[in-house]
Length: 131
Image (cartoon, rainbow, N blue to C red; front, top):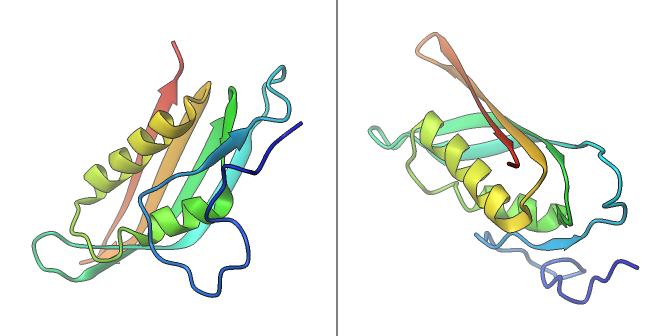
């Protein structure tokens, strides 16, 4: 049985605030490999040099082990980058590292597809496999 008693961000709070906290819950089927795919089309952070906003779609694909990430906490986690300056490569690796630390998945891939800047499109992919 999956418990939600440890999830503090899930629920009907009138307001939501950005948070670096990734909440997790027990995988309901840890005996089986299966993919969870989550697309978030409204990720933003700032260019660390110009302060201009960077917009991206973040695609998360993972095979959970014992834990899964809770979606509202993931959304609030993504929001926490809105006022932070990061290069595309750094922020994508930060997201992957934080998700790996929170869930310890069997396999994970984070793909960040950034909108055009100066005529150049950037896609950064980070992949992780459990040893």
